[in-house]
Structures are given as C-alpha cells and as structure tokens.
Amino acid sequence: MKKNIHPEYHTISVVMTNGEKFETKSTFGKEGDTINLDIDPFSHPAWTGSGQKLVDTAGQISKFNKRYNIKG
Image (cartoon, rainbow, N blue to C red; front, side, top):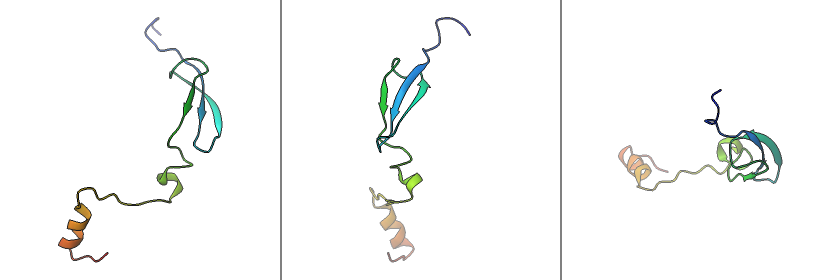
C-alpha cells in the first residue's frame, strides 16, 4: 500500500434499533466512535415483511387502476 493515502482503519461500535451492540472495523470517524442505526434488519420492511404500504405521491396508482378498470 502507498503511505499516507488510505483512511485510518479502526474499531467502532454499532448500535442497532433494538439496542443490540456490536463492534466492527471501519474507516468511519475515529477509534471508539459509535454509529446508531435508523434502519436495520429489525426495523426495515424488506427484512421484517410487515408494514408494507404503497406511497402514491402523484396519483399514479389511481391512474393505473382507473385506466385498467381495477377496483381496489
């Protein structure tokens, strides 16, 4: 490796949404820093399979349903 061009690689703590903590190596922050996650496998619908809903900000779903005469 070339000297003085790579970020420092050190140990940090990661706190999941349920309070679970673990340590990992990262280039984030400095030695001993903590990352508090907002989204992780305990809270995101992609992993939990719950809370899925469509956000229809521009009425696109309604237009599609009307065009193809879908009741819903």
